[in-house]
Image: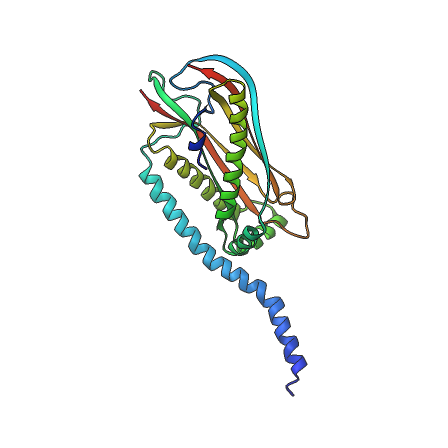
Length: 162
Length: 112
């Protein structure tokens, strides 16, 4: 009854249908753990660097003279896990908030601002903060999907008061 | 991204140079690089892609490319006799499959 060809077919079918499911579950579990760990690290570092203010305005409170300033730049490239990518694709059908991307971009923006602050540890403030987001996969052909990465660049002027 | 190697020219993204006065404007200076992705890094990134999160290889790649573009802008500013570049802006665009352009521009000035 055990036909080797039939067994081979079964293995093939299991592989074809099973692999995406396995990858999705793997992405969900490991990606979820990594995301929680990253958010914990972000919160911890945000608390630690809370003393260094970051302003999106061109100047800080008036009346204080500046000693010097320099440009600081930090960036981070992030991507969605396999499971969330599938979720986001389904979201395209019905519309609405794509929560998977919301948390991804939240992570990326907070991480890039934190890296900026780490570079300006010896300064009193960062002014004129600019955040720029760019999709690194927008020009990929449909057949060969790109890495699906998003880059967030944060830059500003780190200043010191006299 | 580390700009400390470009210390000879002061860069800011505000209109002034903090602590100094601008005495002369030299106009626009700019630098660009178009960087393609690295096959090895792409394979590593596609594994990392399964679980999501930061793709460190790409962060480094784009950071290096942006430093290079800034270097070009700074060289241009120095050739004009400037000692600072104000109002620096960055822009990134995906121009072709797997390639991104990093562009940086600003106003070259002399500050004293």
